[in-house]
Image 1 (tube, helix red, strand yellow):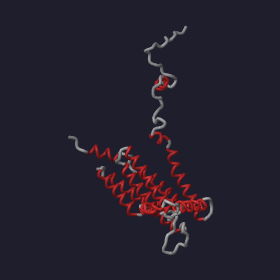
Image 2 (cartoon, one colour):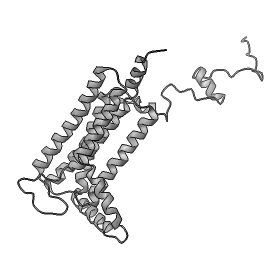
Image 3 (cartoon, helix red, strand yellow):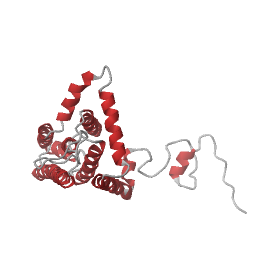
Image 4 (cartoon, helix red, strand yellow):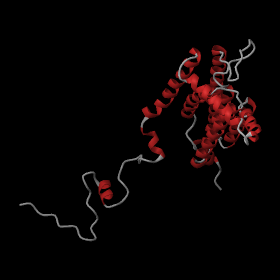
Length: 272
């Protein structure tokens, strides 16, 4: 004869369910007893290394997809480029939008090497002020310089080898480079993006997210300005964004994790 378990009274805590104590808490209306990372949090992003690694692979495949069509001058990208060019031209010529020309040209100029270089150097200088460790400083400098060098080499090589004409037409002369991929788009994306990554090593999580969001918006505006000013095809801009996405994804995994350099700086401060 088996002894019966007394019924739980009003003040008896809930018994663990089949999943253990956490499951019992969940049945009692408490916080779901899932093991970390809890779904929906930022930490859930790191649960699958394979899912993260697929991101640069997908970008690389898309870059190849774009490049093959530009080289062959055939495929869905070509009529898409023409449709975007004509649509932007019509929008730019629309009544009441002439005031956008000057700010759009100013935004396009942000894709030059000077604005991007100044932003990257300033970000590195600020990170160095918050990073006492010399090895970390060298690491930040090396990753930033390597990112810019890789993107520059690929962009220049692509422009020279592919020799694509711009949206305004005309042949590429011997002393000119082609338009694919976009140099201004690549310069702004890799310089501003690397600056945000370097700053992210010493910023708080909230500030780091704001820096990344602001940088993404700025780079998107630069790309839009290049289309508005009729400097590049949409495919040129997409190719540079894709290339820089691969390089910056790699750089983010080589740099110290966010806040590590700042924590090291605070730990090195003397205690009164």
